[in-house]
Structures are given as C-alpha cells and as structure tokens.
Figure 1 (cartoon, rainbow, N blue to C red):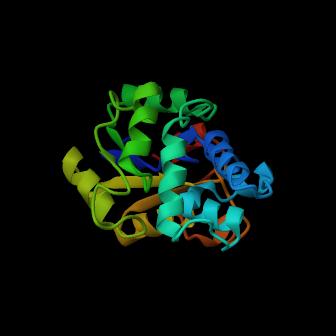
Figure 2 (cartoon, rainbow, N blue to C red):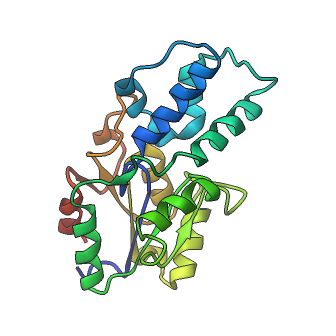
Length: 217
C-alpha cells in the first residue's frame, strides 16, 4: 500500500449503507402528505444522488409545499431524527479501514451530505475519531463534482491530490476525482443505478467489494 499517500472516500454507498433510513424518511413524508409509497428497490439505486433525487422520484414534481426548498428542508429535518436507526457500515468496510490504518495510510471523507446529517452518523460509527478529514456538501459553496471539496480535504491532510485516490459509488464521485487530477476507484457494491453503466464512468479501477479496494492502493 505505498502507491498513494492518502485515500479519500465518499460516505453513503461507499463506506456506509444509509439507504434504509433515507428511504424510510421519504416514505414517512409521503405518508404524511397522503401520497403513494415508492418501492425501496427503486429508491436504493438513487440514494447516492441525495435527497433531491429521492424527493423528485417520490413526489414526481407535484410538491405539496410552496417550493421545493421547503419540502427538502422538511425531509432533512425528519431525517435528522432517524438517520442512525439502521445505518451501518457495509460488510468488510471496518476490516478495510483497519487494514488501511495498520499500513499508516491516512484516510478521509468527502461527501455531498449536509454537515448536520453527517455528524450523528460519523459519531455513532466512530468515524469522526478516525478520519483525518471530513468535508461535507455544505462545507464550501460548491460540492462534487466540483473538485474544491477534494482539494480542501487534501489540504487538511497535508497531501498532494496527485498522491491521493478518491473512492466512490456515483459517477459524480469519479468526475470529482478526475477533476482534481486524482486516481479514482468506483465501488460496484454501492448504490449503482442504471443511468450510466459503471464501466463508462472512466474510473481507473472498479472494486466489487470493499476489501478489493486494497488491491488498487
């Protein structure tokens, strides 16, 4: 594990399986507004695109609030009360992180998830004590695929982006890494939708399991 000086991860769909809580929050909101529920299988494929995509699917453009921003804020407020109920690491991720740390390879997180929604999760799972950088979707005025959050994480870790690798389960993760002139690994075990095949994301490598990431470090 000496090819890189550091590794950066996306959060949802890469390190953690947060889909159950995100989907439950949406269906609770749909129930509140007397709208039909959406199948979990459909929503799970879209989780990496965030709350905006989930709400677009759930309400199909017919929003019961004065504007979309109000509805999204209501969704996030609900999510904050239940975002650690079922959320956990993917299988093999704890082993992956332990092996990375045993090789003295620093790691961090760059996510588009808002800070308030991220904090409880990383504290519950012990990530906040282990990651050397955590950059959220509202840390800067821009988010992925803009490379600025990745550059900030690298600065926090005191590493050259060209000596770092970014790992994620969404095409915008790979775009962000490439925009930062960084090596990239796509996670085929994450929330992969059918929009664009993972083979077309132009990631340097594709990992079918968390532990396979080690093969590319």
